[in-house]
Image 1 (cartoon, rainbow, N blue to C red):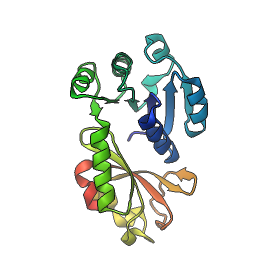
Image 2: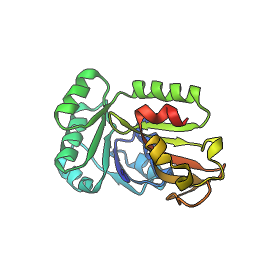
Image 3: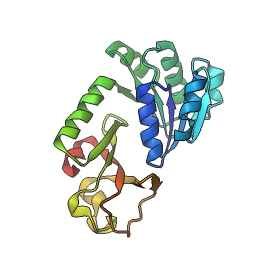
Image 4: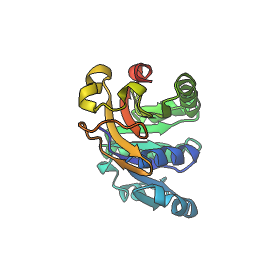
Length: 213
């Protein structure tokens, strides 16, 4: 299961993704060449680094080989995006996700090693559609072609029951990554009753999302 993430490039998409992952208990490294922005965002990340992401030597200092997922969020900077995606894959990162501004850029990023290409407008449309059909869904993020991560309120029939009792993994193939209550996030206790004031960070196959909302 993915637990550590490096978000390279702190545009609006990168900021929102990093904050949501961090708020839900993931280890998150953020990097950008804007020192003022990095200082501003540092409280919402495990590690915050100001560096020029177009320089291979700087990428080597980030320790990307220790990450489960690297997300390249610099679709306006083709050269830096290509460099980051290529370096991350060569470093052995299991999942490299890259944001692209066009199909042509997406194909280029695929060629240099990106496992998943995100076209933000398409993902935003999927997120909006899911929000429209469910009051439980809070956030939705693509992780790969078939896997996504969602932040959701528990369904009414789950309240008061524990994860073992509900057999959520068997029924829906989901993995509860973390539980969030207020400003705190913690691993799920399979024996603890699910409360109505918590949020669940769940990794799930995209085909199963509508089954649990």
